[in-house]
Image (cartoon, rainbow, N blue to C red; front, top):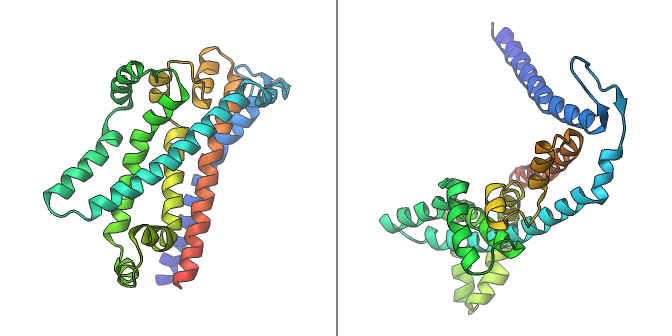
Length: 266
């Protein structure tokens, strides 16, 4: 009886894994075929003609849009990681209702609809002369990204033993020395993860980019949407495949980091 249940559990896990693999692989395969299909009309199962000319846009408009998205996302990741580190650490030191209020304020940019956040930001950024500029888009993206990083570091510092920092201070280390030589080295992995989270928040952001950028800052998601609206499915498919690359890389790095942590813990 026990062996039968064990075999059933193994079969269920294998089937679930296969279903997940198919659910991920099929959309990617469709995008890849669509990006190379010159003419694909119903009821044909495959395109009648193939061409790689859509991928030539990587050296043109799609490449520039991807470079813009990458640059903005890298800056947002660094800013949100630094802000989240400071804010999350400060919130973790609070107790009682001030801690709950501070955590709620950090969560607000995440919970608020991007349209509402972008509408408010658009008004003030236009007054400040930042509307339609990459800097304005970076600042707008940093709001939800920093909120997410703050909550992440709140969880990190809530379970952190700070006796190592106290020992460094006892030995005469100054605050900046404790920060640079003790705290930051001890949280390298968490800081890298927070930067990656901020990067992904910015990479996939559409409403804030559209409202604050005013259509002048052309990122990769906006380029994909413009190709879809224009009926250029092949170009949109190429852009969609590019959009998938950073999340897959971050997921891969997270899996490697988790395995290394498990090996060290063992």
